Amino acid sequence: MTLIKTEALVLKTIPFQETSSIVRLFTKEQGKISVIAKGARRMKSALRGYLEPLNYIEAIYYFKITRDIQTLSKVDLLQSFFSNTRDIECTLYGTAVLEVIDKVVRDHQYDDEIFYLAVQILKNMDLHADQCIVLFADFLLAVADILGYKLDTSVCSQCKARLKTAIYNPGSGRLICRDCGRYTSSAYKLSEHEIQFLNDLPGCNFDIEVNISVEPSAAERITQLLIKYLSYHLDYPLNLKSLSLLSEISQ
Ligand SMILES: [Zn+2]
Image 1 (cartoon, rainbow, N blue to C red):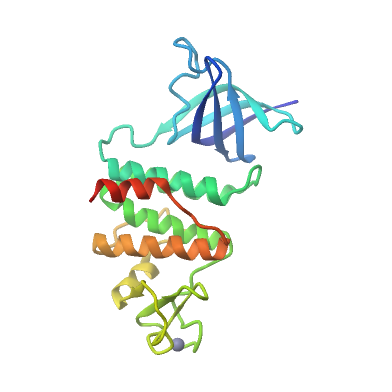
Image 2 (cartoon, rainbow, N blue to C red; image 1 turned 45 degrees about the vertical axis):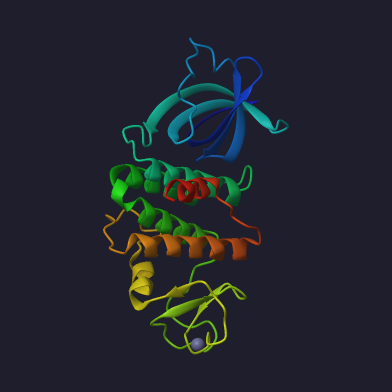
């Protein structure tokens, strides 16, 4: 049994027995793991309040390779994202980041690139509530890139002509030009400005200050397109509950 100390994002917490919790963490050192936080729901527990989703923590746990669930020993809070905001929309985009991680990262799959990306995006969302949707689009684009599915916005995937405007081809999961897409039925057509928006997103260079202008409705559509795009290449649907909730709220 080894004692591991690592930074982690709390993805999900489920009550377990009378006073404990099972917590899913995305750790910097060991990827996605589950830990049991014994007695964490007791009033006097030192773990109480630290294990909420959207918390960025330093966790110490006992690791045994033969166990599915590791034992949490100690937690320090590094940052609690969105704790100072009442912006439900922004909080839901933050939750959507966690949901994407939970769906695209496999258990014990070490990926410090996605970890670093997620922490930076959540920090930026917390600072720039008005840019949450842009940051979420940026996150999806960068995740696709890290997973090996970089979205090509430069040329038509069929005739290789330079793309000014584009149509998303749901059959091939790629962008095509208007000419090639004459007979393609697609819900996603991108204007010149929207292609520019995708090119301007910092992608993996997320330290850059985000200040990109696009209509909120266009940003929402582009986000939907990127989710379709990722689902196509991952070969399973990325149904995000937080975004369904968001669209229910905004109706
Ligand atoms: Zn073409």
